Length: 454
Image 1 (cartoon, rainbow, N blue to C red):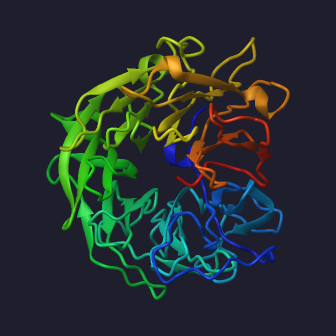
Image 2: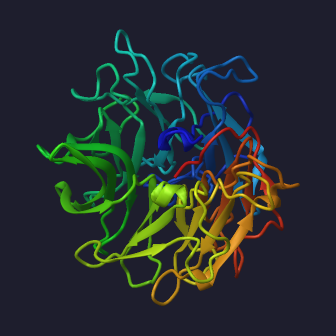
């Protein structure tokens, strides 16, 4: 069975005593070029969940952890890793059996020192008498990697029992002032923490993002640039009750000097599980790809809300019945379980990776796979799609669920986004090429236990 979006996409990171194999050149005292370059060496790094709640790690810690694999010219350096958990030196809190440290992950250079910082959600953390209040920890980047952490204080409305503060996270410069900001879900509401942030725990102003009086309950976030004005925009996934009836919706909020301003909403026939923003037709406006794996008895679809100068307008739908797409729609395939956007072949058009983790292949149940849609003139189309099967991991078997999380980012700095795909107990890094990500030169990730940093 599937778990909730947050649990399926668990991820966390920090360092526990591993000596770095090299020291990066000192970063400048300016915002890091890459929001996920924790040691400032110019290469993106990859963070992901290690173990989940209730499972003890090999060194005796429990309650979740994050593994970080540092980037290098060939992609990922599996000999240079860190594991971060609440029993790591300098990290607030204590690992406990029902914690879920790393349930959600985001990153940005929050204190503007030239090193990206990791933001880790642990929505099941007990704080005093408040059960499942949840916590958010900022793990600070440095020349030698991640080191030390600071707790983010929740506001009233997200600091009580069952608030699950930190269940989802997203970063971006939403007001365009040059300081990264942080959006957090807690108490079924979204909160905007404006930067800059400090290691002592201070932040800019904090405001609740909500459809006041509209019966809106938030459960997911995605950040990116939609309307072309240079500011980061935010998409909130949620449920709105209208006449006591639930409606599954996403809500677009435009980045503005005041923080965020409310925009259009879009309603779906099933719950949106995740979203990714990319300019699939290279018209200067980001398109919002929404994964709807429960649609039509779990056959699943992806809906793309097209970006314009005034925000999203008009949409396209893709599934396994789309011309050129491998496979056929079957109940329980969960096409769209995960989505991620990036330019895999360096042609300037964003592409879209779509996870199909419950795809059955040759009588093997829930093997899974990934469909990569290439962007181009007019946007995404099934005729420019490629199927990447579970068998790239090794001998094909049932219940592997390859594609439960997917991530597209250029980790080797060659101008082509690389594809990282997770499965049950394994994950694979696949380099981008001039055509599509390839298993040639692929790397299995160490100590993988969950989803990836966005």
